[in-house]
Length: 90
Length: 296
Image 1 (cartoon, rainbow over the protein chains, first blue to last red):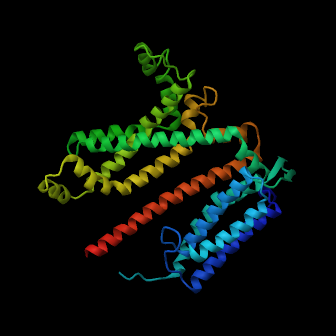
Image 2: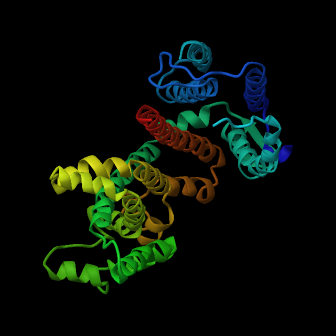
Image 3: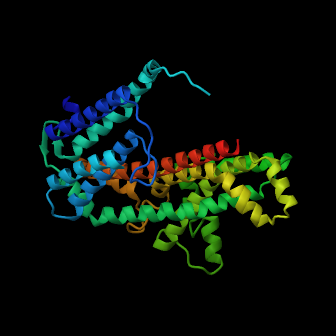
Protein backbone atom coordinates (compact mmCIF):
# COMPACT_ATOMS: atom_id res chain seq x y z
CA UNK A 1 0.00 0.00 0.00
CA UNK A 2 3.01 2.33 -0.02
CA UNK A 3 2.04 3.71 -3.47
CA UNK A 4 -1.09 5.18 -1.93
CA UNK A 5 1.01 7.01 0.66
CA UNK A 6 -1.20 6.09 3.61
CA UNK A 7 -0.98 7.85 6.94
CA UNK A 8 -2.67 6.78 10.16
CA UNK A 9 -5.12 9.73 10.31
CA UNK A 10 -6.27 9.26 6.70
CA UNK A 11 -6.60 5.50 7.23
CA UNK A 12 -8.76 6.14 10.32
CA UNK A 13 -10.78 8.71 8.37
CA UNK A 14 -11.56 6.31 5.51
CA UNK A 15 -12.17 3.41 7.92
CA UNK A 16 -14.78 5.53 9.71
CA UNK A 17 -16.44 6.49 6.40
CA UNK A 18 -16.47 2.84 5.27
CA UNK A 19 -17.92 1.73 8.63
CA UNK A 20 -20.65 4.37 8.37
CA UNK A 21 -21.52 3.22 4.83
CA UNK A 22 -21.60 -0.46 5.82
CA UNK A 23 -23.72 0.19 8.91
CA UNK A 24 -26.08 2.38 6.90
CA UNK A 25 -26.52 -0.52 4.47
CA UNK A 26 -27.19 -2.98 7.28
CA UNK A 27 -29.60 -0.53 8.91
CA UNK A 28 -31.41 -0.08 5.59
CA UNK A 29 -31.80 -3.85 5.15
CA UNK A 30 -33.01 -4.32 8.74
CA UNK A 31 -35.48 -1.44 8.66
CA UNK A 32 -35.94 0.26 5.27
CA UNK A 33 -36.23 4.01 5.70
CA UNK A 34 -39.19 6.13 4.64
CA UNK A 35 -38.64 9.54 3.09
CA UNK A 36 -39.76 12.29 5.42
CA UNK A 37 -39.60 16.02 5.91
CA UNK A 38 -37.94 17.41 8.99
CA UNK A 39 -36.12 20.64 9.68
CA UNK A 40 -34.45 20.66 6.25
CA UNK A 41 -36.46 22.38 3.51
CA UNK A 42 -36.69 19.20 1.39
CA UNK A 43 -37.97 15.68 2.05
CA UNK A 44 -34.97 13.45 2.68
CA UNK A 45 -34.09 9.81 3.15
CA UNK A 46 -31.56 8.61 5.71
CA UNK A 47 -28.81 8.53 3.06
CA UNK A 48 -29.61 12.07 1.93
CA UNK A 49 -29.31 13.32 5.48
CA UNK A 50 -25.95 11.54 5.93
CA UNK A 51 -24.66 13.12 2.71
CA UNK A 52 -25.89 16.59 3.69
CA UNK A 53 -24.36 16.19 7.16
CA UNK A 54 -20.99 15.00 5.84
CA UNK A 55 -20.70 17.58 3.06
CA UNK A 56 -21.63 20.49 5.30
CA UNK A 57 -19.17 19.21 7.93
CA UNK A 58 -16.44 19.17 5.28
CA UNK A 59 -17.11 22.82 4.41
CA UNK A 60 -17.30 23.72 8.09
CA UNK A 61 -13.87 22.14 8.63
CA UNK A 62 -12.45 24.09 5.68
CA UNK A 63 -13.82 27.31 7.16
CA UNK A 64 -12.34 26.59 10.59
CA UNK A 65 -8.95 25.57 9.17
CA UNK A 66 -8.66 28.34 6.59
CA UNK A 67 -10.17 31.38 8.23
CA UNK A 68 -10.02 30.97 12.02
CA UNK A 69 -7.46 29.93 14.59
CA UNK A 70 -9.85 27.54 16.34
CA UNK A 71 -8.50 24.05 16.95
CA UNK A 72 -9.62 21.50 14.38
CA UNK A 73 -10.77 19.09 17.11
CA UNK A 74 -13.41 21.65 18.10
CA UNK A 75 -14.61 21.59 14.49
CA UNK A 76 -14.70 17.80 14.59
CA UNK A 77 -16.78 17.66 17.79
CA UNK A 78 -19.20 20.32 16.52
CA UNK A 79 -19.48 18.46 13.21
CA UNK A 80 -20.33 15.19 14.93
CA UNK A 81 -23.06 16.94 16.95
CA UNK A 82 -24.30 18.58 13.74
CA UNK A 83 -24.25 15.24 11.85
CA UNK A 84 -26.24 13.50 14.57
CA UNK A 85 -28.77 16.37 14.70
CA UNK A 86 -29.24 16.31 10.94
CA UNK A 87 -29.70 12.52 10.99
CA UNK A 88 -32.22 12.73 13.82
CA UNK A 89 -34.24 15.90 13.09
CA UNK A 90 -33.25 16.92 9.53
CA UNK B 1 -47.56 -0.64 -10.81
CA UNK B 2 -45.96 -3.07 -8.41
CA UNK B 3 -42.33 -3.78 -9.06
CA UNK B 4 -40.77 -7.00 -7.83
CA UNK B 5 -38.19 -6.22 -5.18
CA UNK B 6 -35.09 -8.37 -5.47
CA UNK B 7 -32.07 -7.08 -3.65
CA UNK B 8 -29.84 -9.77 -5.16
CA UNK B 9 -29.93 -7.69 -8.34
CA UNK B 10 -27.49 -5.33 -6.62
CA UNK B 11 -24.77 -7.92 -7.23
CA UNK B 12 -25.07 -7.13 -10.92
CA UNK B 13 -23.76 -3.65 -10.11
CA UNK B 14 -20.60 -5.14 -8.61
CA UNK B 15 -18.45 -5.01 -11.82
CA UNK B 16 -19.24 -1.32 -12.25
CA UNK B 17 -18.48 -0.69 -8.60
CA UNK B 18 -15.10 -2.40 -8.97
CA UNK B 19 -14.29 -0.39 -12.10
CA UNK B 20 -15.25 2.90 -10.41
CA UNK B 21 -13.27 1.94 -7.33
CA UNK B 22 -10.22 1.25 -9.47
CA UNK B 23 -10.49 4.35 -11.65
CA UNK B 24 -11.95 6.94 -9.27
CA UNK B 25 -12.24 6.04 -5.60
CA UNK B 26 -8.71 4.71 -5.05
CA UNK B 27 -7.03 7.64 -6.88
CA UNK B 28 -9.21 10.03 -4.88
CA UNK B 29 -8.16 8.38 -1.62
CA UNK B 30 -4.54 8.74 -2.72
CA UNK B 31 -5.11 12.46 -3.28
CA UNK B 32 -6.46 12.74 0.27
CA UNK B 33 -3.33 10.98 1.54
CA UNK B 34 -1.07 13.34 -0.43
CA UNK B 35 -2.94 16.36 0.88
CA UNK B 36 -1.82 15.81 4.47
CA UNK B 37 1.83 15.10 3.72
CA UNK B 38 4.91 16.91 2.53
CA UNK B 39 6.27 14.61 -0.14
CA UNK B 40 9.84 14.87 -1.42
CA UNK B 41 10.15 11.49 -3.07
CA UNK B 42 8.75 8.01 -2.67
CA UNK B 43 10.54 7.33 0.60
CA UNK B 44 10.47 10.80 2.09
CA UNK B 45 7.00 11.90 3.09
CA UNK B 46 6.23 13.82 6.25
CA UNK B 47 2.85 14.19 7.86
CA UNK B 48 1.86 17.86 8.12
CA UNK B 49 -1.80 17.63 9.17
CA UNK B 50 -4.07 20.28 7.71
CA UNK B 51 -1.22 22.71 7.02
CA UNK B 52 -1.62 22.58 3.22
CA UNK B 53 -5.34 23.21 3.51
CA UNK B 54 -4.66 26.30 5.63
CA UNK B 55 -2.00 27.47 3.19
CA UNK B 56 -4.09 27.06 0.02
CA UNK B 57 -7.23 28.57 1.60
CA UNK B 58 -5.21 31.66 2.52
CA UNK B 59 -3.28 31.84 -0.74
CA UNK B 60 -4.44 35.01 -2.57
CA UNK B 61 -3.41 33.51 -5.91
CA UNK B 62 -5.85 30.64 -5.44
CA UNK B 63 -8.58 32.85 -4.02
CA UNK B 64 -8.25 35.06 -7.08
CA UNK B 65 -8.42 32.19 -9.52
CA UNK B 66 -11.42 30.72 -7.68
CA UNK B 67 -13.18 34.08 -7.92
CA UNK B 68 -12.23 34.36 -11.60
CA UNK B 69 -13.56 30.84 -12.13
CA UNK B 70 -16.95 31.68 -10.63
CA UNK B 71 -17.10 34.91 -12.63
CA UNK B 72 -16.22 33.04 -15.80
CA UNK B 73 -18.80 30.25 -15.26
CA UNK B 74 -21.38 32.87 -14.28
CA UNK B 75 -20.85 35.04 -17.35
CA UNK B 76 -20.72 32.05 -19.67
CA UNK B 77 -24.03 30.73 -18.30
CA UNK B 78 -25.65 34.19 -18.30
CA UNK B 79 -24.95 34.52 -22.02
CA UNK B 80 -25.28 30.96 -23.30
CA UNK B 81 -28.58 30.00 -21.68
CA UNK B 82 -30.77 32.93 -22.92
CA UNK B 83 -28.96 32.93 -26.28
CA UNK B 84 -29.41 29.16 -26.67
CA UNK B 85 -33.14 29.43 -25.89
CA UNK B 86 -33.52 32.31 -28.36
CA UNK B 87 -31.71 30.35 -31.10
CA UNK B 88 -33.88 27.29 -30.45
CA UNK B 89 -37.06 29.37 -30.65
CA UNK B 90 -35.99 30.86 -33.98
CA UNK B 91 -34.92 27.60 -35.60
CA UNK B 92 -37.06 26.30 -38.48
CA UNK B 93 -39.18 23.33 -37.42
CA UNK B 94 -39.42 21.34 -40.62
CA UNK B 95 -38.01 20.99 -44.09
CA UNK B 96 -34.48 21.06 -45.45
CA UNK B 97 -33.64 24.25 -43.54
CA UNK B 98 -34.30 22.47 -40.23
CA UNK B 99 -31.76 19.75 -41.04
CA UNK B 100 -29.25 22.28 -42.34
CA UNK B 101 -29.56 24.41 -39.18
CA UNK B 102 -29.07 21.35 -37.00
CA UNK B 103 -25.88 20.40 -38.86
CA UNK B 104 -24.49 23.93 -38.75
CA UNK B 105 -25.21 24.16 -35.02
CA UNK B 106 -23.56 20.81 -34.37
CA UNK B 107 -20.26 21.79 -36.04
CA UNK B 108 -18.73 23.77 -33.13
CA UNK B 109 -19.54 20.90 -30.78
CA UNK B 110 -17.46 18.52 -32.89
CA UNK B 111 -14.27 20.58 -32.74
CA UNK B 112 -11.73 19.57 -30.08
CA UNK B 113 -10.93 22.10 -27.36
CA UNK B 114 -7.32 22.75 -28.36
CA UNK B 115 -8.38 23.35 -31.97
CA UNK B 116 -11.04 25.83 -30.81
CA UNK B 117 -8.32 27.59 -28.82
CA UNK B 118 -6.04 27.73 -31.86
CA UNK B 119 -8.83 28.93 -34.16
CA UNK B 120 -9.61 31.82 -31.83
CA UNK B 121 -5.98 32.57 -31.14
CA UNK B 122 -5.50 33.33 -34.83
CA UNK B 123 -9.02 34.69 -35.48
CA UNK B 124 -8.74 37.32 -32.72
CA UNK B 125 -5.16 38.45 -33.42
CA UNK B 126 -4.95 42.16 -34.07
CA UNK B 127 -2.33 41.89 -36.84
CA UNK B 128 -3.45 38.94 -38.97
CA UNK B 129 -6.73 37.66 -37.45
CA UNK B 130 -10.00 38.48 -39.18
CA UNK B 131 -11.87 39.47 -36.01
CA UNK B 132 -9.02 41.39 -34.37
CA UNK B 133 -8.12 43.19 -37.58
CA UNK B 134 -11.73 44.24 -38.27
CA UNK B 135 -12.27 45.50 -34.70
CA UNK B 136 -9.06 47.53 -34.87
CA UNK B 137 -10.04 48.75 -38.33
CA UNK B 138 -13.22 50.18 -36.81
CA UNK B 139 -11.06 52.31 -34.59
CA UNK B 140 -11.46 50.28 -31.40
CA UNK B 141 -8.21 49.41 -29.70
CA UNK B 142 -8.36 45.66 -29.19
CA UNK B 143 -5.53 43.31 -28.32
CA UNK B 144 -6.18 40.22 -26.23
CA UNK B 145 -2.50 39.64 -25.61
CA UNK B 146 -2.00 42.99 -23.82
CA UNK B 147 -5.33 44.01 -22.39
CA UNK B 148 -6.98 42.00 -19.60
CA UNK B 149 -10.52 43.10 -20.51
CA UNK B 150 -9.97 42.14 -24.15
CA UNK B 151 -8.57 38.77 -23.09
CA UNK B 152 -11.63 38.13 -20.90
CA UNK B 153 -14.04 39.11 -23.64
CA UNK B 154 -12.25 36.83 -26.10
CA UNK B 155 -12.22 33.84 -23.74
CA UNK B 156 -15.92 34.26 -22.93
CA UNK B 157 -16.81 34.84 -26.60
CA UNK B 158 -14.89 31.70 -27.54
CA UNK B 159 -16.85 29.63 -25.05
CA UNK B 160 -20.13 31.13 -26.25
CA UNK B 161 -19.16 30.27 -29.83
CA UNK B 162 -18.23 26.72 -28.83
CA UNK B 163 -21.10 25.79 -26.53
CA UNK B 164 -24.24 27.86 -27.19
CA UNK B 165 -25.14 25.20 -29.79
CA UNK B 166 -25.42 22.61 -27.05
CA UNK B 167 -28.05 24.63 -25.20
CA UNK B 168 -29.81 25.46 -28.49
CA UNK B 169 -29.95 21.80 -29.53
CA UNK B 170 -31.17 20.67 -26.10
CA UNK B 171 -33.88 23.36 -26.07
CA UNK B 172 -34.81 22.56 -29.67
CA UNK B 173 -35.46 18.92 -28.75
CA UNK B 174 -37.38 20.08 -25.66
CA UNK B 175 -39.54 22.40 -27.75
CA UNK B 176 -40.33 19.66 -30.29
CA UNK B 177 -41.58 17.46 -27.44
CA UNK B 178 -44.39 19.91 -26.51
CA UNK B 179 -47.70 18.50 -27.84
CA UNK B 180 -49.57 20.70 -30.32
CA UNK B 181 -52.65 20.72 -28.06
CA UNK B 182 -50.96 23.28 -25.80
CA UNK B 183 -50.47 25.67 -28.71
CA UNK B 184 -54.06 25.12 -29.88
CA UNK B 185 -55.34 25.97 -26.41
CA UNK B 186 -53.12 29.08 -26.42
CA UNK B 187 -54.52 30.14 -29.80
CA UNK B 188 -58.09 29.76 -28.49
CA UNK B 189 -57.19 31.99 -25.55
CA UNK B 190 -55.49 34.40 -27.95
CA UNK B 191 -52.33 34.21 -25.93
CA UNK B 192 -49.50 36.51 -27.01
CA UNK B 193 -46.15 35.04 -28.07
CA UNK B 194 -44.67 36.15 -24.76
CA UNK B 195 -47.46 34.42 -22.81
CA UNK B 196 -46.93 31.23 -24.84
CA UNK B 197 -43.22 31.40 -24.05
CA UNK B 198 -43.75 32.16 -20.37
CA UNK B 199 -46.55 29.71 -19.57
CA UNK B 200 -46.00 26.86 -22.04
CA UNK B 201 -42.53 26.74 -23.54
CA UNK B 202 -40.36 27.79 -20.62
CA UNK B 203 -42.00 25.48 -18.02
CA UNK B 204 -41.77 22.58 -20.48
CA UNK B 205 -38.09 23.35 -21.08
CA UNK B 206 -37.24 23.29 -17.37
CA UNK B 207 -35.97 19.71 -17.45
CA UNK B 208 -33.61 20.08 -20.40
CA UNK B 209 -32.49 23.50 -19.19
CA UNK B 210 -31.42 22.17 -15.81
CA UNK B 211 -29.37 19.46 -17.51
CA UNK B 212 -27.96 22.06 -19.91
CA UNK B 213 -27.01 24.42 -17.08
CA UNK B 214 -25.42 21.58 -15.12
CA UNK B 215 -23.36 20.43 -18.11
CA UNK B 216 -22.25 23.94 -18.97
CA UNK B 217 -21.45 24.78 -15.36
CA UNK B 218 -19.31 21.68 -14.85
CA UNK B 219 -17.52 22.10 -18.14
CA UNK B 220 -16.82 25.80 -17.74
CA UNK B 221 -15.84 25.33 -14.10
CA UNK B 222 -13.16 22.82 -15.09
CA UNK B 223 -12.05 24.59 -18.27
CA UNK B 224 -8.36 24.29 -19.06
CA UNK B 225 -7.41 23.78 -22.68
CA UNK B 226 -9.14 26.67 -24.44
CA UNK B 227 -7.88 29.59 -22.33
CA UNK B 228 -4.50 27.87 -22.05
CA UNK B 229 -4.12 27.77 -25.83
CA UNK B 230 -5.68 31.20 -26.41
CA UNK B 231 -4.05 33.39 -23.76
CA UNK B 232 -1.86 31.04 -21.73
CA UNK B 233 -3.56 32.53 -18.65
CA UNK B 234 -2.42 36.06 -19.43
CA UNK B 235 -1.99 38.93 -19.68
CA UNK B 236 -0.55 38.67 -16.18
CA UNK B 237 -2.85 36.26 -14.44
CA UNK B 238 -6.09 37.74 -15.70
CA UNK B 239 -7.39 34.62 -17.44
CA UNK B 240 -5.72 32.01 -15.25
CA UNK B 241 -8.53 29.78 -14.07
CA UNK B 242 -8.59 27.18 -11.32
CA UNK B 243 -7.44 24.12 -13.22
CA UNK B 244 -4.56 26.03 -14.74
CA UNK B 245 -3.39 27.28 -11.34
CA UNK B 246 -3.71 23.73 -10.07
CA UNK B 247 -1.73 22.23 -12.94
CA UNK B 248 1.02 24.82 -12.52
CA UNK B 249 1.21 23.96 -8.83
CA UNK B 250 1.18 20.19 -9.19
CA UNK B 251 3.21 19.63 -12.35
CA UNK B 252 5.08 22.89 -12.82
CA UNK B 253 6.32 23.39 -9.27
CA UNK B 254 5.85 19.80 -8.12
CA UNK B 255 4.06 21.01 -4.96
CA UNK B 256 2.04 17.83 -4.68
CA UNK B 257 0.79 18.38 -1.12
CA UNK B 258 -0.80 21.83 -1.62
CA UNK B 259 -2.07 20.80 -5.06
CA UNK B 260 -3.74 17.72 -3.53
CA UNK B 261 -5.30 19.83 -0.77
CA UNK B 262 -6.58 22.25 -3.36
CA UNK B 263 -7.92 19.41 -5.52
CA UNK B 264 -9.96 18.25 -2.54
CA UNK B 265 -11.47 21.72 -2.09
CA UNK B 266 -12.15 21.89 -5.84
CA UNK B 267 -13.79 18.45 -5.62
CA UNK B 268 -15.98 19.51 -2.68
CA UNK B 269 -17.19 22.60 -4.56
CA UNK B 270 -18.04 20.51 -7.64
CA UNK B 271 -19.76 17.93 -5.42
CA UNK B 272 -21.84 20.63 -3.70
CA UNK B 273 -22.95 22.19 -6.98
CA UNK B 274 -23.78 18.82 -8.57
CA UNK B 275 -25.79 17.84 -5.51
CA UNK B 276 -27.73 21.12 -5.63
CA UNK B 277 -28.59 20.52 -9.29
CA UNK B 278 -29.44 16.86 -8.68
CA UNK B 279 -31.76 17.79 -5.81
CA UNK B 280 -33.46 20.44 -7.92
CA UNK B 281 -34.01 17.98 -10.77
CA UNK B 282 -35.40 15.22 -8.53
CA UNK B 283 -37.57 17.77 -6.69
CA UNK B 284 -39.03 18.87 -10.05
CA UNK B 285 -39.72 15.25 -11.02
CA UNK B 286 -41.51 14.72 -7.72
CA UNK B 287 -43.69 17.78 -8.29
CA UNK B 288 -44.49 16.48 -11.75
CA UNK B 289 -45.58 13.04 -10.44
CA UNK B 290 -47.70 14.80 -7.84
CA UNK B 291 -49.37 16.87 -10.57
CA UNK B 292 -50.08 13.78 -12.66
CA UNK B 293 -51.54 11.87 -9.71
CA UNK B 294 -53.75 14.89 -8.91
CA UNK B 295 -54.98 15.05 -12.51
CA UNK B 296 -55.86 11.35 -12.63
